[in-house]
Length: 212
Image (cartoon, rainbow, N blue to C red; front, top):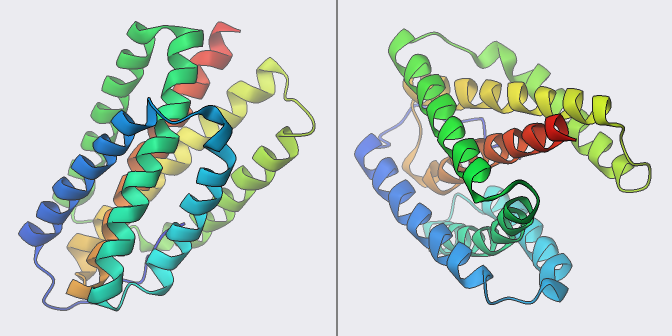
């Protein structure tokens, strides 16, 4: 989910990136804590994560609520991300997971830099990206009951990579072209975080499918 209606206002980029840095530290704390959380808690934590995500976007205008919700989401998301990382480390090996992370950093950073430096307006992509994300979610839900073939898995994960590169272009161009209000910082931080995390997970999924 993305908060895409940022308004031109007095939002400060240094403050945004300061909050983003703090949020990432909390996410890393969640990843560390996730090593000690039994897998039996995975599904309840995913439910809590989705609930917090929805709350971040619906209650983002309130500073008293938006920031605590954002930080809570980042911590819980870090725990659930640890489950995924542990799975891919066990199936692909730590080296490939590290390479996937480096590739995600380069792809995300390069895309974000291009969006900022080119000053192009990618807002026209919003409808396509929303529809494509819903398609990704739909296919994922179907895949819970009907396993995908190796070829379909490659196509699905490749499509996911392209979609979250698109979201990165969209989110960073919105910041530079249209600005943002300070009260929107929690939802912007979560959007940027989700862009990167989903890009990383789809890269891991693509590598796993190509090895199979």
